[in-house]
Amino acid sequence: MGNYFTYITTNAIRTVLYIGITNDLERRMTEHFENKGKPNTFAGKYGCHFLIYFERFPNAKFAIEREKELKKWSRVKKENLIRTMNPNWQFLNEEIKERCPVIAIAERNESLRSQISSGWYCHLF
Image 1: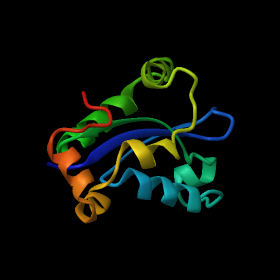
Image 2: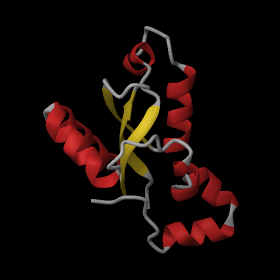
Image 3: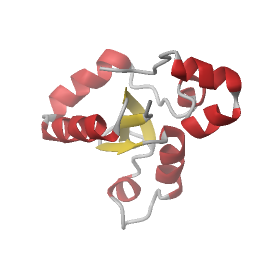
């Protein structure tokens, strides 16, 4: 089973949305944070390192398809989607460490590996 995510981040005042994909959500959020203020990336330039929404997929193909779909949506439609999981637009960066262990961590931890292999999901459409 794969571990792929389509996610949405925002800036501190929630005015900019960034949509991306990754196979390691925690690592990717760290990368966005480390790139803040760097103009060579969209997320860095606009400070989009606050996770507000994510979906988990079994493979990269589905995550990429969902990313492309969401990028075509209007701002209003994206906001409505975010509210389905996160009505108050709370920053989820710390929460993902508990809810979505990544495969690398799970491989070193028997109880996490069994949870993932038994179908323990963060958010799956």
